Amino acid sequence: MLDKIKTIREEVENITAANKEAVEQLRIKYLSKKGEISALMADFRSVPADKKKEIGQKINELKSFVSEKITQLKEAFEVSEDASITEIDLTRTATPVALGTRHPLSLVKKEILRIFESMGFTIAEGPEIEDDWHVFGSLNFPPDHPARDMQDTFFIGRNPVDVLLRTHTSSVQTRVMEKTQPPIRIVCPGRVYRNEAISARAHCFFHQVEGLYIDKNVSFADLKQVLLGFARQMFGPETKIRLRPSYFPFTEPSAEMDISCDICGGKGCAFCKGTGWVEILGCGMVDPNVLKACGIDPKVYSGYAFGMGIERITNLKYKVKDLRMFSENDIRFLKEFEAAH
Ligand code: DAH
Image 1 (tube, rainbow, N blue to C red):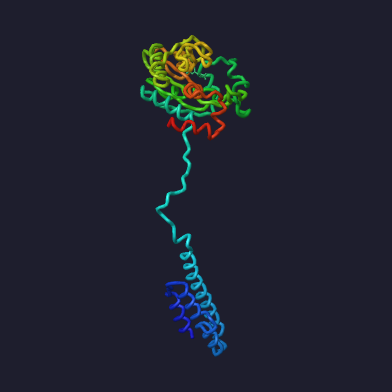
Image 2: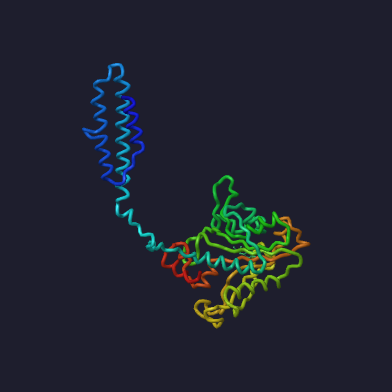
């Protein structure tokens, strides 16, 4: 009897079936009332009492093995006969997935960096979470400067109080100068934070690109020429620039740069408030105190720096009036920049 069980098991292990009907035939052959397993059960009556346990177990095992095998075969046909699966049309066009577009600020940032890279600048980045030294101290801000006030700067945690969100990317200047000796020629893009009420004209975070060039004999004329080159590549070859004296703690002398209004061509309109000029950035010669603080000898080296807001440049280039549009992620707004890619 044990031999018989073994033979059936081997037989079943190797069976295959061509279709559903063949599987049904196999079921009848093995599992029906007149099938081979029922026949074994009938023979079981004549098994001597001391073998009943062993043989009984073997028959039960065989029965579950055969049922499982038949179920598997049956399922295989159920799946492959399912029309929706067997008739996949591999040549059909896939459902289109709508592609995103680059954010206008990313487009403008890329363009700014491309222009400066073409003039030999490399990109440097630094952390958004900073300390007082890198954002203010090293950059010649006096201890009581209003920018250090809670009103303008987001301080993080109480202890240590020296952790804050950078208010400008000028902090990256310090980080690079501390680690590298001149010549240094970098542009530093990044996000900055200020404690401002959000409105059409101000936001609590925005983006800047900082520039820094330190070498021997760097002059204000070098700065002016680089900025003129930038303005013409960014806003068109007819663009004019003018530098107005200004003040920043980290540069001396300091200036703000305007470009000729590209809406009225300099004649004066509502956009430039009748002046023919719009402001685009701050700049100046790096203050010797800053060089000294960062371990660079101001008797040997000099340099210039400039900083611009990416939102500001984007506003001028694409006439976006409300700063909030940049962070609302309204798809209708973002889609308008598809063509600018
Ligand atoms: N850090 C200034 C700001 O956030 C921008 C700036 C002005 C950067 C003059 C400079 C600079 O490097 O020379 O408003």
